Length: 233
Image 1 (cartoon, one colour):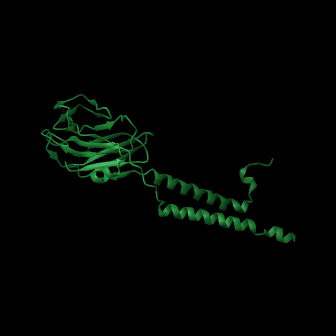
Image 2 (cartoon, rainbow, N blue to C red):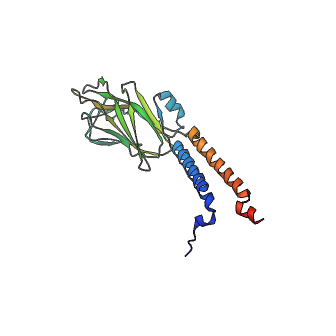
């Protein structure tokens, strides 16, 4: 019994070329999509602020008193939480237990950009040398991992993405040291940064060009009379 399907409409000699053309097109689209979803990391607070759209949020953690708090604090526009308790002092937010993770999330309005000064401190809030790992969770439940190295009191770290941010979790990757480290944050900024139009990477352009050449070759083959037709003339 003959089998009828999509591929039976094409001469057998054209199948490899058509398959290659489709594969190259799919690869090209995949690379373009990957490029469009890339995140941008900032290490300069001025660059980050000037990139933010008007109306961005700012949290300096002032007016929260001093001392140990619970594991979560609702600050209106966002929520700060820790795997242990939180500690507030001198207008900064910190974990109350060494090597505990500090998470920013539950944003009141959707955002795609967040930045702050992030570093490690000891129990006296003196700066400690060490790196901090950042787990970024997007609104679509996908994640990315970044590293702040080195993380000092002068270190600003920010991120913007084509996707909305759901939460950012900061964990010290150093220590434990004597009386530390505690992940510490100050001067948080959040809002929207309009991403620049993605520029296709050279590899993507090459694949698209190959797909186009494949289509041209296929068109030329269709225009050429087949050997069978020539033998019948």
